[in-house]
Amino acid sequence: MNGAPCLSLFHEVPCRKKMMWWCGEGYTMRRGRFAVAVLLGLVFNVPGYAQGPGRSYTLTPYDVPTSVGNNTSLFDLQKGGRFAIGTYFSNKQNAFGVKRKKGTVTPFNLNDSFINFVIAVSPVAIVGSADLPNGKRVGTIWPRKPSSALWKKILSPSVPLPSSTQEPIVIDIENYNSTALLGLNNRGQVVGAVQRSDFTFRGFSIAGGTVVIFDYPGAQSTQAEGIRKNGTIVGYYTLDNLNHGFILHPHGQFEPFDVPQACETFIFDTNDAGDLAGAYVDCMSRQMRGYVLTRKDQLLVVSFPGAGTTATQVHGLDEHGNIAGHFDDATGRHGFLGVLE
Image 1 (cartoon, rainbow, N blue to C red):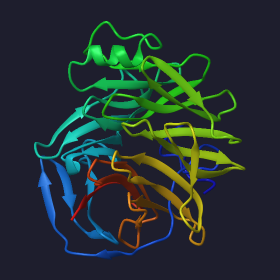
Image 2 (image 1 turned 90 degrees about the horizontal axis):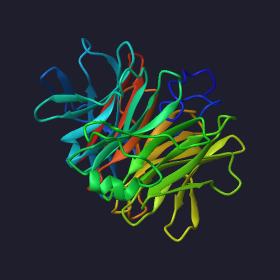
Image 3 (image 1 turned 30 degrees about the horizontal axis):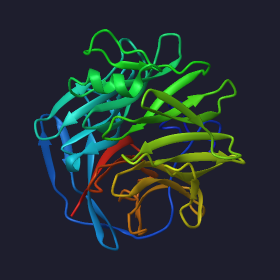
């Protein structure tokens, strides 16, 4: 893991000195039928499946056109991937959303920020982060419909709202070096992480006008990555330089989670049905693999097929259990969607 490139503070960080997130053991991936379609410059193909007890995914690579950029990542999706969000690189890191049926791509870059992320989507907003010209990272909320009353109820008085509803809402929590929004639910409650001066992190949530900052007991770092409508929060924590998943129940009790026989475990998302998604580090191969833990506690490992794949991460879940993520091979980074059969 040491020596791999660090791309950001909160996501796409496969290096020991920052933060990480990854996989475990389970069921096999088999190569299936192959098809290619081109939709307004965006390439989709279907080279494989991920299967487990009671669940089967068709995995579809997703790249922006090479004329636009490279190293595409997908972080979340809605309605089986008909709308997805992610990032790609050009002369900077760009955040975007895409409607697959129409092929329309919408940028979500904050002003002239060089690094932009959109990480989670719900019916009320898209959330992420961006780096300001001074290098400080701030959280961003992009409302998806006129919802100033909703966001005033959720954020005020802790977070001031912009004067124009066309502008993203910027979240900069005081007394911390950086702020990133990493998840939200259908009610607009958001979660994320703040960075301290020693480059460690604390989790936080914002709901009902109140910011709550928390740490997993005894952990060096804590990052909150997803939240259900009942207030259950998921994420991962770092203890003795190793990462482990956690579930924070609404009554305040932490529950740790590790993929069996994994060296490290990361939880990146959850849905209201109770599924979990993330990645883990396989102890034998030292490779990162994605996983889905279903509401019935069935573990499905997601490793994008092909001998050249070196890492796979699952980052997003929709309410039906469809997934979004990215994989690495010799040609770079590529997004993918996993749609339930």
